[in-house]
Length: 148
Image (cartoon, rainbow, N blue to C red; front, side, top):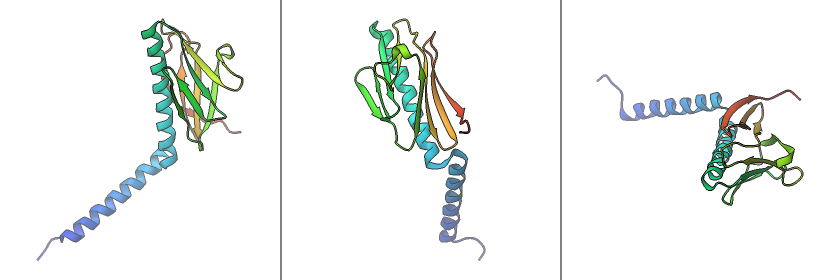
């Protein structure tokens, strides 16, 4: 009798699934890369929410990030923690800062903002949430990590 048994077929399928998972983790930076992208997407989403809230309410709204404490605060009492394994960098207008060492991006009712950038770094990979000062548009971009 020619052919494969059910056990042999299941074994091959399991090995193929494991190989696919390992290959996917190698190409995406593994768990650290997935954590980096997930946290970056969350920050970009909260920046967009804060901008939308400023437009909807007609009141300026502030997004705060504290790189040392790995925390962020958005409009509507939203707040969260950034994974401690990631490095956090902020670039923005000093005039928008509420406290020293804390970054802030102010969104205006017309959709504009003070602009800024929140960068998360893991190893040699980095993602930045860029906020345009004129339009307030939030873009998530992959960054190159400069050698230190």
